[in-house]
Image 1 (cartoon, rainbow, N blue to C red):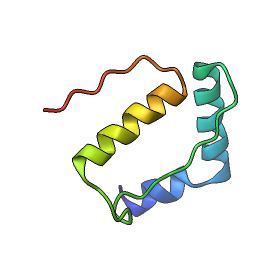
Image 2 (image 1 turned 90 degrees about the horizontal axis):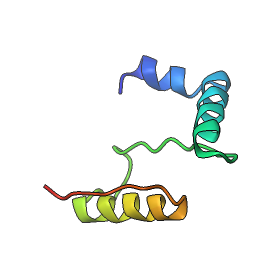
Image 3 (image 1 turned 180 degrees about the vertical axis):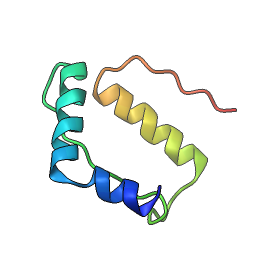
Length: 68
């Protein structure tokens, strides 16, 4: 992500709008948190798949993760 994109996404207005849209789509109040993958120490593929599956299960979202 470019510095401009990061700065734009981190403005309170952008965060509020994204939270509003995600909340509408999910049908309940949602909060967002940006995660900088460059700063994430454990960035292995299996861990990422587990994280996605756990997130989907927590929110009862129909999602299928395929490992290519």
